Image 1 (cartoon, rainbow over the protein chains, first blue to last red):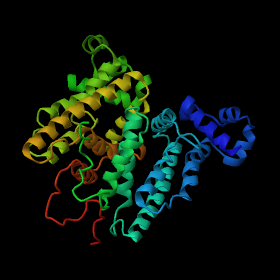
Image 2: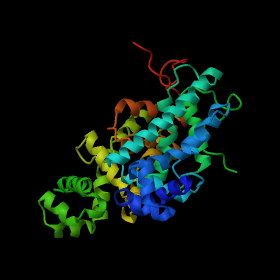
Image 3: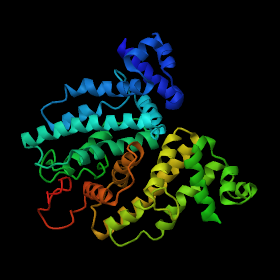
Image 4: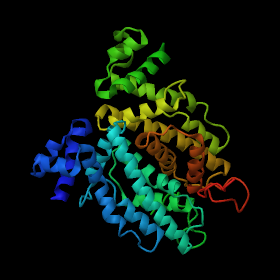
Length: 199
Length: 199
C-alpha cells in the first residue's frame, strides 16, 4: 500500500503541479481513504517528501559497493522517478514539476531535505573512498555532488532530455577526478572531455 | 526604450509567471503602448526570448579576451538577470520562473534558443583556445557547457542560492581541465576539489 501511495503522489504532482495537487487526489489515485493518508503523513508536503526520499532510502543501505564510482552510480539511480519507476519521461516530468514549485516554501523544504540526504550519502561514499585510498583526504563531497547533479538536472529540466547513463558516466568521471581520484585505465589515457574518435 | 521594455519583460515574468504574463502587462510596466510591442516582437514568447538573449548579444561581441578562462567568465556574466542587472536575487527569480515554465512550448523554444546561443559562444571560445594551444583538438564544447552551467543552475533553481563568483571559478577550473586544459599554476598544485586548508 505504501509504495502505491507514494507512486500516486508523484503521479498527482506531475499531472496537477504542486499548488493544485491534493491529499484527496492522491487518495483517489491510490484507492485509499484520505483520512488514513492524513493520519500517516499529515500534509501533502510530507507525503511528497516521503515519495521523493523513499527510493533514496532503499539505496542508502545498499550503497557500499566497494568502490567510489559504483557507489555514486547507485546514488544516481535515486533520481526522483519514484520506487520501481526507472522511466526517463517520468523523471523529466517529476523534475520539472519540482523545479516549477521550487519557490514554494513546502517544496523548498523538500528540496533542502533531498539535498541533505544526498549529501550525507555522498559524504559517506567519500569517507569510504578516502579510507580505501581512492581519494585524498580533504576531498570535498559538496563539490562532487554539485558536479554530479548539476549537468544532469540542466539536461532534464531546462532541455527536457531523459537521463542518459552514458552522459552520467562521463560527467561522473570528471567529478571524481575533480576531487582527486586517479583516472581509470592506463597512463596517457584520453582526457574525458575529448570527443570520441570517428569510427 | 528597448532596454526598458526588456527589463520590464523580466519583471513581468518574475511577478506573474510565464502563463499569466502578458504583452499588455509589459507595456504598462515600461510605459509604452502595447501595439508598438506587438508590432516589434509579435508575441510574449518572442519578447521573452529577446530579453533573455540581449545580454548574451552584448557580451558575444566582446568575448574574445585572449584566454579561455576569461572568455568563459564573460559568458557566465550573461546569466538571465537582464541588461544592467547583476543582482543575485533577481537571477534566482528569473531562473526559477523559467524552470517553472520549462514544459511550455514557447518557453521550451526560448530555452533551446538560449542553449544554442550559448553553445555557439562556447564553441567559438573552444576553437580559439585550440588555436592558441590552450586546449587539445577535439575538446568537446557541449560537455564544457554542461559542466559550467549545470552546477550553477542547480544551486540557483533548486536551492535558491544567489550566484557566487568563487563557486563559479572553482567549477570552471574543473570544466576546463575536463576538456583538456592544463591546470593553472605550478606542477603539483592541489586538486581543485580539495577543501581549502584551515587558516
